[in-house]
Structures are given as structure tokens and as C-alpha cells.
Length: 136
Image (tube, rainbow, N blue to C red):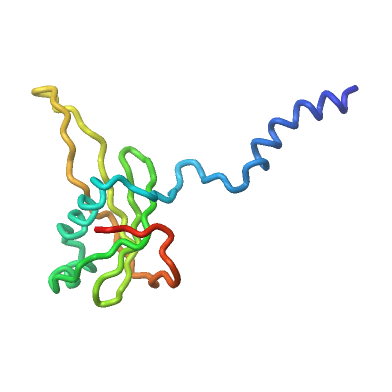
């Protein structure tokens, strides 16, 4: 009897832990494919407006960024992690942060701060087909 009781008690816990091995990690990055058309120009604009030391030489040469992969993470705002390829065939992993709408204390209006590049890391370019083709 006790074994049956313990089995019924443990079953839901085990299903929650082991039942969904392919589910995304809560709070982690998830693929953002497809992304609303309004976000891509804003992400590219944030990259172009960046004064990050790694991006500055690439942007000075007017090298157009091509988004190969995009993931998002919901935090106190949204982090977008992009795999970006430039015309010189260099690839970079770029994290762009989009803050939440903030309410102005004076007039009560909601305002959106601009997106901001948080980190840039040179990386290997993706080999093979892109999982979600992006048009920037």
C-alpha cells in the first residue's frame, strides 16, 4: 500500500523533471524565429549606432551586417543574441538589449529607451543552411 502511495506521489515530480527533456531552459535564450518585421530594422540600427570597439572598424568601412541567427531572452527587458556576418566574411555574436517601456514621472507618458549593444564577441561563421533566413 505504501509503495503505491509513494509511487503516486513521486510520479508527477518525476514527469516534471524528466518528461520534457527538449523543453527550453526557463530564463535562457530561445530561438526567435520568425521575429516581427518591426524588430529587425531596430536591431540593425542598434548595431550601426554602436560605438563598440570591435564593431567600430567594421561599421567605418560601411560593411552591412547580415543576421544569420537570432535568439531572445526575456529579462527586465529583452536580450537579443545575434549571429551577425559582415561583408568581410567575419562573424560576431552580438547581444542587443531592449529595455522595458518606462513611465515618465512628470507627464505619465510611456517612453521606450533605444536598444543598446551590450557585448560583441568574434566567433566562427555558421556552416550550412541558416535555420531561419532573416532579411535586414
